[in-house]
Image (cartoon, rainbow, N blue to C red):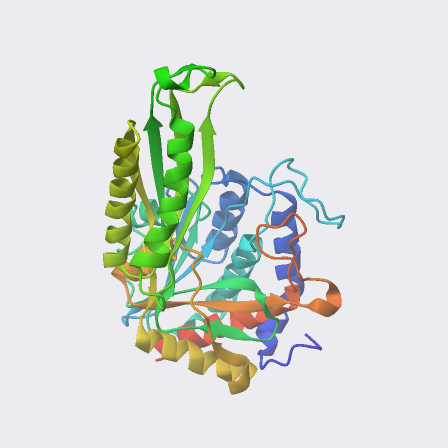
Length: 393
């Protein structure tokens, strides 16, 4: 922690080596969504040994409860899943599972929350309420928060606040970034299938070619953002897949477009859903084709409660200094932490983990991704202060 100036108590600093060992073990053995059997097993076993009431949820998730009095409950969440990505960096703790990698910091999130669990168990007499720990699968998709909630993550008892953090390589180590209100975007998926009439490539007049229709639709969809959304309001529409055709001289019978939409307001989310379908259908009709349209909702907007965000900013400033707590730019990345925050007021924040001197500069989801492990005790300290503030005797 020499280069990261932080007021971290000795009991938490003493957990650093254990945190690193846990994180690197998880990094070596990444598991994809709803396959986190080993990870969830390690988490459940360690929490039970610490005296938590532990139960499994959402197939591979873990809900753990530590009761310290008759006061309110506060929940803390970490995600556990890895990405379907091949790690290319040569490091001692490189993934041993081909095609799977912790390239988003979830191994660090799990290690941080486990260390906080150990600290809380050792100091439970300081807490006048209940601590709930939510170790969640499948954040990268299809989403583990909803099944965790369905399995009682926010019941018995219902938390008064919920907090979570994300290690963030867009921010230097030693900083925290957060924002009250809309913080991260909703994420939805659309599929447009353009249905034409197949035929011979030399006789297009006898067919309805869906490829030029699809090309027109791809261009027109961008004008929904550039001409129908106010310029000061962030929104993204990306067509990420185009599939159609089987040979150079065959007119395909249909073409499939698949993409994502990111917005920061529920009403804009509904507007985008309706306009994509209408634009695609009308362009296709004008060119003699038809469309089939699917809209698949994924994650809602991540909205931070103003009071909870102010509490995080205050406690983070106590750890790192006021100048190290900054207002985050709104990002159009998405998070299923949003499902918890729809139901319980709370705050999700970024903990800077970039260190250029150490070469830890690669973005999330990159095959060389890694982060400055020395920030992990900072995350534990912030969690500890949030718990003590909310559950003080």
